Each structure stands twice: as C-alpha cells, then as structure tokens.
Amino acid sequence: MAGPKGQDRRVNDLPRPRSSAVFDGPDRAAARAYMKGIGFDDDALRRPTVGIANTWIEAMPCNFHLRDLAEAVKEGVREAGGTPMEFNSIAISDGITMGTEGMKTSLISREVIADSIELTVRGYQFDAVVALSGCDKTIPGAVMALARLDVPSVMLYGGSIALGHWRGKDVTIQDVFEAIGAHAAGDMSDEELLELEGCASPGAGACGGQFTAFEVMGISPMGSAMVLAMNGDKSEVAREAGRLALAALRDDRRAGQVITRESIENAIATVCASGGSTNGVLHLLAVAREAGIEMDIDDFERISRATPLLADLKPGGRFVATDLYKAGGVGVIAKRLADVGVLHSDALTVTGRTIGEEAQASEETPGQVVVRPADDPIKSEGGFAILRGNLAPDGCVVKLAGTERLRQEGPARVFESEEAAFDAVSEQTIKPGDVIVIRNEGPSGGPGMREMLHVTAALVGEGLGEEVALLTDGRFSGATHGLMAGHVAPEAVRGGPIAAVREGDRITFDVEARRLDLDLTDEQIAQRLAEYEPPAPHYTSGVMAKYARSVSSAAQGAVTQ
Image (cartoon, one colour):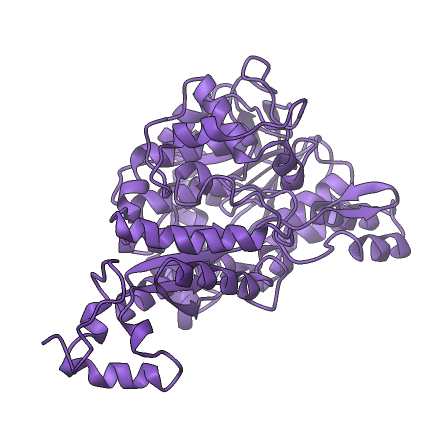
C-alpha cells in the first residue's frame, strides 16, 4: 500500500515526481495533517503540486498587482489538474530607491530572490513552478532560480504600466527623472514638477519604457509579457500560464531544455535589437552561469555587432511597451531577428514549440512603425557595445541606442559616490566636454552596484545629455541615454584602473575602436593604484557585507560565489 486506505488512489494521470515524496505513504501522515488543517483535502494532496513563486509587494507599483494575478494563475493550475501553493519572495524598486542608500539593495535582491525561490521549491519539492515577476531584479532573479532547479517551469511577467498624460502629451516615469534636472536648472517650476509627478505613473505595472527579452529566451510564453499589467486580458494570460505549467510537467519539459546557449543568445539579440537596458548584460550572464553555460561579455559584443537596432523604443526612441504591444508584441521583433539571420529558430520554448514557430505565428499590426523592417534599421548594429582599454581591461558596457556620439575626449571630473556626483550636477558645476567618473559604486564597492539614473537624468534635464560623457563601476537604468559607460571592470575597490583617475586627467571614449582609455602609461596607472586608498566598507555585517565579500566582477554577471 502507498498509504492509509484510499491514499494510493490517483486522481489523474499527471506525474508527481517530487511531491509524492512529501505526501504519499503512512510515514507522511504528519505532512498531510498539517496541510489538511489549512484547507488542502485528500484530493488536492494527490495531485501534482505547483509552486506559485510570487514577488508581490505593496511598496512599488511594478509588482503591486501580482497577488491578484497569482489567483488567476492558481485557477489555471486547478483547471489543468494540479494543486497550486503560493509563496512569496522579495522585491526592491530601482526607481523608488534611486539616488539613495536603498538603491544598493536592488542588485543584491536578485540573489536573494533566486535563493529564496530555489530553497522553497527544493524544500517543498513542488512538481512544477510558475514564477511571477514584475520589475527590476524580480525578473532575472526568478529565471536564475528556474535555471538552478531545472523543473517544469514558466516565468510570467506582470506587464507594463499604462502611459501617463500631462499637458497634452504622453509621459512616463523617465520624464519625471529628467524633470528633476530641469527643475534644478530653473527650467521647471515647483508646481509643474508636482503636477507631472501626479500623472506619470497612473497605476500598477512596471515602467512604461521597459521591455523583456525572456519571451524570446522561451521561458515565458510568447505574447504574455507585453499584455499590460491592468489590461483585462492579463488574467487569462495568467490562467494560461498555470495550465501551461501542467502541460510542461506532463511532457517533462524542464527549464534546462528551454534555457540553453541558443536561447540566451536569442535573448541577447532581442536586447540589442530593441535598445534594451545594459542591465541585460549582467542578468543574462548570471542566467547563463546558473544554467551551467559558458558565456562572457565578448559574446554580447559579437551578437550586438551582428544585430541591427530595429525597435524604436524609449529611452532612445519614441515608443514604449504599450506601443509595442499594439504593434504585435515581442513576436514582431523575433520575426525580424529571423529575417536578419540572428535568431536560433530551433530553440525550444516553454510551450513546446520552437521560437521560430512562435515568431511566425505572431501577428504584426499592419502599418505599425514601432519595429522597423529588417532592411531599414534604425542603426546597423545593436543597442550596446563592449569597450576595453587601460581604464576597463576586463570590459565595460556602453549603450548606443539614444546617442549618436561615438567619441569624446575630455577632462575627468572624479566622484567617490553617486551622491557627490549628483550634488555637482545640481550645483551646475559640470561643464560641456567633461567626463564624469563615479567610482566605488561597483558590485563589491557599493556594495550593490547602484544605477546612476538620478545623475544621468539630471544631466539630460539640464541640457547636458549630449555634452558630457560618464563612466562608472556602477550601472545604469534602462531609462538612461547619452554616452555612458557602466560596469567598468575591474571595479575600484578591487584594484581596477578607474581608481587611478584623478581630477583633470584626460579620458577618451572611442566607441568605433571599442576603447576606453586614460591618458597615462601603464607604469603611472600602477603607481597610482599602489597609492590609492579605497573608502572604508559601508557595511561590516549583515547581508550587505556578505554580498560585498562574495560577489564576482560585473564582467562575470555580478553573481555570488
């Protein structure tokens, strides 16, 4: 007998490769007793269990609606014959914490999200997983966990926020960040800024300019991500994700079969073609590592060189995620990638179909102008470039979408923190031609590798966006545009040459040559590094200190080891 009388009866033909060890047999009576006390009956405990890994939080709009969305996912799981069990991880908003000490927690949260989902799924031995993500580090954190677990899995993105409207034009949160700089420069009144902030973020959902590549990776079903957060169709998308998890379980279609080198390269190409965030480099490197796939930043450079910029999306372009949705969604970009020969069309997706099949099935809205034809790209190469040089021997990332400048040489303005740089921008001491250097903001030095949107948006707001350049061992938001180099590696606290820069030194950005250089000899740089004393650690205990000790270089995805 598998257990007490009746306990060996199956209620459907779905496999239970993990949960049977938790709930079957006389020796598991205590486990069943716990669950019966909170509403799970014998029928529910004989079905496959599906972990609903939520990242709901009430402290930001991006994930605010995920609790309701999870209910729809659970309906789909039950309809397909499974028993859903929801649990929660954490979520930190980049946008809300931007420019504060709290921003240091954001990238660190990616590891905590991945760890917490992994631990919960391993602990309860769920048979399948649906992970709900909204914004910032919840997306890569969830996918990293799914790659580690290698069980039948679906990642469901909560969707973008609707556009705001202000004085007859569409606005997003990016406009507010840039308005802060305009206000500091005296070009916007207190009343105008207050009015704008009340319009730019009109409900739940992730940033209006955001777009995710995980549909093209295949771990999210095609067409699911671009449905807006508060669109009435999103509940059905969520129910379908729940049903899909059971279909993947029935077919033993695991995350490891979907997350492959080819599928990650498809995701990289999507970021390149859409002018997506340089954060994609960090996160896709991290996903590759969790999946056991050898990949480095030179792969990103190779793919970006071969992939034209095709989607006219903010911050560098005219349109936002809502417009891409109306144009036909991510599938239109996937079609274009196939047209130019950079899509690995045979890569498997979570639906069981290939990404090539999913792309061909996508319906493009006639006359749409968000995604350009393959033979009429915005630019002939992708949205970012990998630079090296004596300032970044291990590499750095420059976003090319949103700027036409490919070269700048100028005097260094050196700041030991983001706050110090922002103060200089606010006080209008940054001049055209300056090269701003923000250091000790790397994965270990920050710790947490803060985004510099507070600084870069203020520069744009003051009219300096196309007049200065910036480099940092920190990172940039997807809303950043201008000539900016992030992820400079090695970082300052680990002996990177960025620590050798002094006020007034000459620095050259040369994007065409893929170089970032300081006008010093190797011997001079070495001497200065020997003399450099990094700031004392900001944290000596707790999660921040633990992360600072264990995190890898940005060139390796800033993963903990």
